[in-house]
Amino acid sequence: MERDEVTGPAAARALGPWFSGLTLGMRPVLDDAPAVLEPPDHGTTLTWRSGSADPYDIVVMGPRTRARYHVDRPGRDCLQLPFRPGRAAELLGLSVREFADRAVALADLDSAWARALVRLITDRDAVPAVASAPARLRALVRALPLAPAAGDSRDGPRRRIVAAATAMLSAAADGRPRTPVSVVARRLNLSERHLRTLFTDGVGLTPSAFVRIDRVRLVLARTGQKAAELATDSGYYDQSHMGAEFRRVMGATPHAFATRRWPAAETCTADPG
Image 1: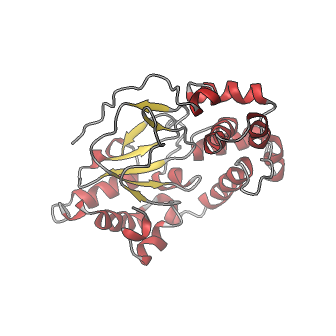
Image 2: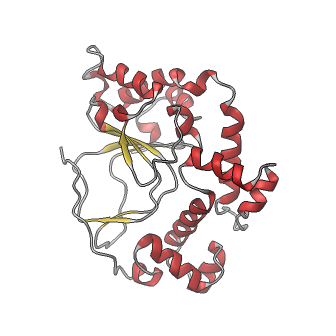
């Protein structure tokens, strides 16, 4: 289920500057897959379990640097909102550099905005009013003006730097090669060290780790393409470089992954509810 099915135009306008999308329910799985795949992800996502007003069921999912394979999925659906680049740090008033490969409950964060949202949804009159997806989104919208960045113009330049760097480091939709980190820093009038600090605080990954995951995600999207062409199009030095990096992130070579010879799946330990 997509954004338009669970939120109106006003909520979409309020959420749009912070989140790049919205899904409700299970993510699609690959056809004939031997396990449920959680692919690598260089983004940060706010996830809220369906039907719950428990703040411990609102989780910030940091970037995922390794693929995970599960026997099966948790039983409860989730409302998932991927943050725009740099916006998670702004909304939470925290650096997200410690969030990589972690899922942190909103109630455990030392964040003024997180505490404000928790107060909104645990108010006696709000429970169980926030159980429906539209109601949860309305609660988020009410909490947005309480974010540290809402009244702090100092975050604007940092956000623009992170957004610009993310765009330049990502694979271009029209096939243009991604911009090297050194060139990104030069175009943004920053030292590479300063860019690395701002980017890691805002995204949760170093620029080089971001590029590594972005390349692997591109390979995942084009597994039917010839390996030599795919390596070039994805920005690798050669086919060997692609294979080594893909295996590091996915736990299998591109060919093994494409032929469904995946690593052993883990048993999902999430509470099925």
